[in-house]
Image (cartoon, rainbow, N blue to C red; front, side):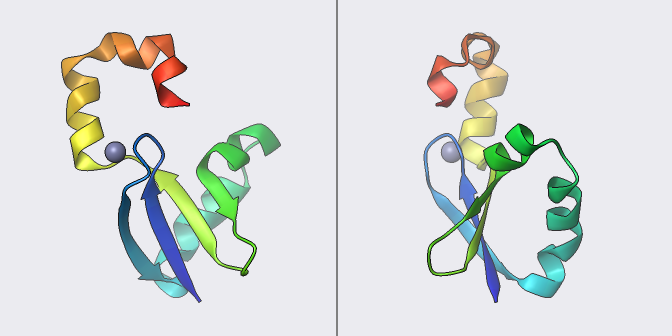
Length: 76
Ligand SMILES: [Zn+2]
């Protein structure tokens, strides 16, 4: 099983990792509160798992325009 990494801001697919390599991250995410877990982990219908993180581009924009981060609207 491969784990997909997707940017949660712009939906860009960042890449995929074999489950073994992503296991640590996923276990950590699963320990979070339910709401938090849903923000970062998506269980796809085909049984795949998507980890929502941030791509380089969005990270740079957030650093340049931190107001967007506070507004939160932009994130959804
Ligand atoms: Zn992005």
